[in-house]
Image (tube, rainbow, N blue to C red; front, top):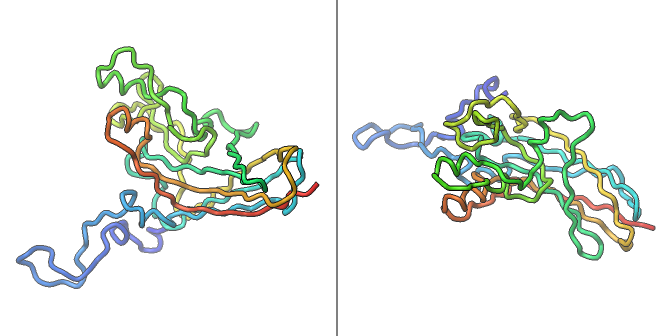
Length: 248
């Protein structure tokens, strides 16, 4: 849609400004700035996508199921989110509910009966993965590292790369298949996520706050720990809240 509107990649990533293209060149009104703003810029990521929470009711009862939806819209990127080295980039949706007593509950994304087998790739897990990294590094008896290093059950937006052994890899040069699964957020796409949560029996009367946040990290922290490059910043892209009243 951005190409159809005459918007080029350079319009965002290399915005024009007055200046010289070289010290000896003439002054120009529209020199492309080689800033390459994108996932390396928190300011650029903030608001690249928006998140909205939509409860199916404004009332909930202890012991009953609360249904709600979260809509995620890629509103500002002219390409899928995430992009670049997609095998290692992480974008995920985290949902929590805060009860009237102040306790917070993690609400996990689920797989519906009709979902494809490949959709399991879209749910965060911390089982051992990326064993091929250990082989490349010459590590003996390496069983892998946590795949996502995220709260298990969060919804991931990603593209999967598989190595020659059919295992997930973040080694782009070692990938044999890249057509297995891709649920990244396309430009101007609105993605609808559906959640169910059972209201605890012991919950007192009061307000429930449903909070959904979309975040970005350029590399799983478990991989960063393995190669000893320190803490990978988590950048919040968008957040939304909605309130539901708990009544007997």
